[in-house]
Image 1: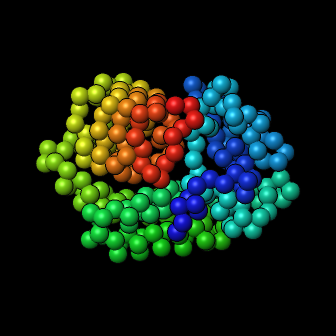
Image 2: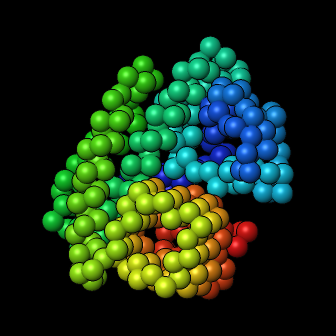
Image 3: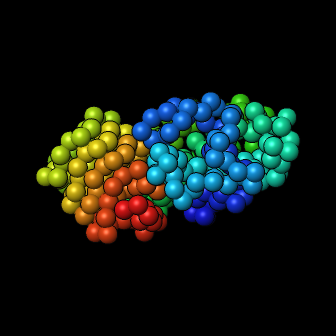
Length: 266
């Protein structure tokens, strides 16, 4: 599985992230949009008319969006290049398939990283089997894809990823902080030693981690919206995604993992 297959390629998609999900008007989305209804900014060529000005127009949530390559997989493989405008009869099925595919591709992102972590070597065989199985599921025909028990598959994969995380973080320090699922909204954590810490699913909205060393900290699913990462060291963090970075705030001194890029708005 190439990392390129798990990155969005909007040129090969049909604007699925602009149509399939429902959006509620908020600080991140300037409008209410029902599921299955195209955003008014979606052009006839399936490109966003304000792509380079999303934040200025109140769509910071879209600017931080990431389908992990699910959009082009659904468009080009699951539906063989048919688009929902020219073939409206497939629209509902395509939009539902996109939701399932995005979940599977996100799992593949984490599994692909896990099999690259040296300390997780005792689990590499299990991790590769899970990655191959997840990739196989993504190639299901639409009818099968929509019947998949994705929550159960996610639970199995997440349990494996947790074991990998524990192996990787074990060698950092004995008194590792455990903030899994914690409400850390607005907290000043600049003095916290988060090396090898567990931040899976933590709410870090608007918190301050400026200058903090996050080496081998597990960031799976952590909500980083508005999080201050100026000068922080994320280069050794694990299970971090581009969309998490895009939702946070950082600067030229923020150190990033090699697989991710510095957001343009930093």
